[in-house]
Length: 68
Image (cartoon, rainbow, N blue to C red):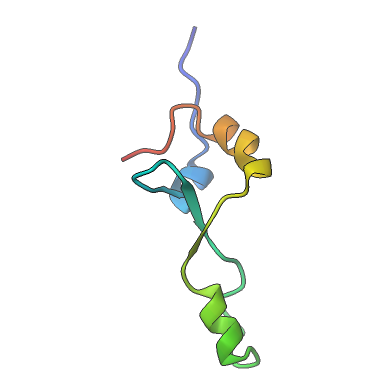
């Protein structure tokens, strides 16, 4: 059986914590920031945990887990 391929787009966008949670960045913080309030931009910064409903898609995209 050949090796399964990792979806590189997912591998580059996701990070894994020491406890095994998979984290992602929030969308909407790249451009057109002048019209967004400071509070909104603050809440867009930082990482957030992947929801449980998305985990099956993530596991299919990363068959061997996240690269170190």
